[in-house]
Amino acid sequence: MAKYEEHRAAPMADVSSSPWVDGPTLATELPHRGIIDRLSDFLDGELSESECREVERHLGKCPECQEALASLKQTVELVRSLPLFGAPPGATQRIIQKVRQT
Ligand SMILES: [Zn+2]
Image 1 (cartoon, rainbow, N blue to C red):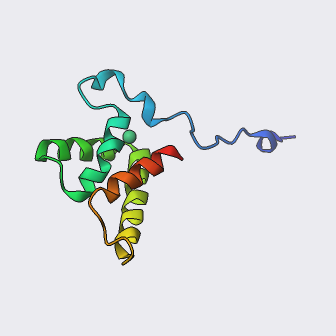
Image 2 (tube, protein in one colour; image 1 turned 45 degrees about the vertical axis):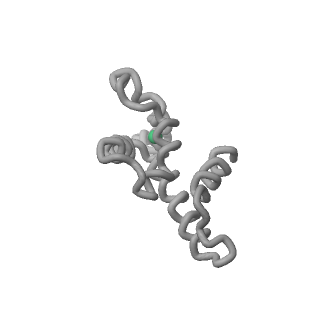
């Protein structure tokens, strides 16, 4: 008798939600990539207050950029902890270029 349980379709993690699809209503906002471009400046505190807020707002709803920021932060901290590099100007910029290529 009651064998319903056996083939109950377990809903898997929802993979359809993507940060790329939240665009149309936010036409005035920078696209996703524009944010990633600014993460290094964001970390360095080189963005203006309004730009900073824009990035934070995007980060608040974009897990992908949050992740990018977290890994960038880690990488930057690692680089800065290496006496060899001594955090030369533009290092963050180069790192982010490298990250984006991978
Ligand atoms: Zn994003």
